[in-house]
Amino acid sequence: MTEPKPTTRTPATPWVLQEEKSGTRALATTGRIALWSVVALAAVTGVRSWFWPNEPAPAPPVTVDQKPTYPVQDAQAVASRFAYSYLTWDETDPDQRAKALARDMPKDTDTSAGWNAKGQQTVLLAQPGEVDELGGKRARVHVDVLVSSPGEPSKDKKKAPAPAERKWVGLEVPVLYTSGRIVVTSEPGIVGVPTSGPSVTDQTTAQSDVELSAQTQSTMETFFTEYAKGEADSVTAPGASVPPLPSGITFQGLQSWNVDQGKGSDRVGTAVVRWQIGAAELEQTYRVELTRVASAAAERWQVAEVHGGTY
Image (cartoon, rainbow, N blue to C red; front, side, top):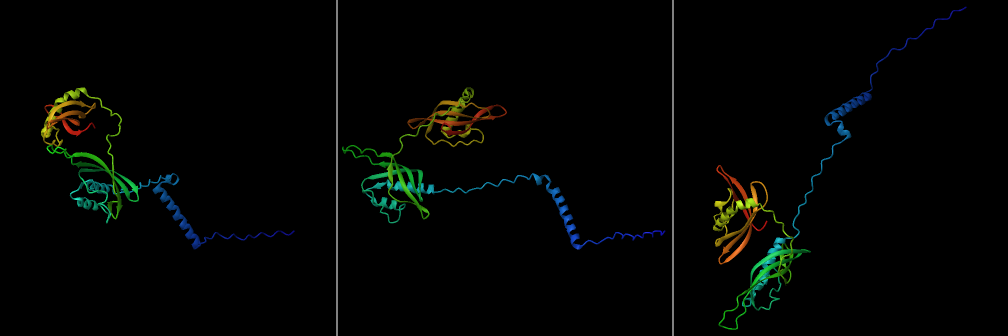
């Protein structure tokens, strides 16, 4: 019996290190750089901001340069000057009025038209008011004018003529803004002047501090006496500046003085004062601000400001 031959095994090939290809090595290097870049970014910005980003900063408000749509002040100035010339006439010198009107009307306008060249009238004051913009660079300006007309001559030659008549009249002047200036485009129109103001709601009256009002009564009387003399600085609080009244005014009495309820060292009150101006007596109202001034010896209330009216 034949014995089997021993099996001969070929030894396995040992592990051999193979060099990476250049492309693979570059790709790995790039990956490592990208990974470390992400880690660095996370350290700087914080991982939280990746998932809950910060709210964007609000955009700054847009500022719009608001410029006047119409040269209102120029329109009022021209309309006032025109009203002064238009309502002033003298039959002894009609050309003077025509020349004055020509300054504010379009070139070659017949400025003598519209007046019959008779009579006399003088403007004492022209006060511009509302400017109504009408579009197309046109506007209408209201002017209040105080005019004076000679009185009617007396039928009795021995008597003096009647005094001049003064009255307020309204004038609405049509104007146009062209070539950088305001011009009056046509004849204006005389309109009425309101005889009274509009109705207003009742003004609330502050409650009075009776004790402080009585305490400072003499302070007010002294102040208004010196105020009329032009020597208010001697009785006002340190640092206060109260311009003196015009000469010819005499203090006649303090009709009433009431300090508003309040707290602190600065208080406000209402004074009703009676002045004498020549032969006339005039009652006026003032709002007076008091401040408490303290020294080593004592403290007292003095006037810091004074304004006409009830508020």
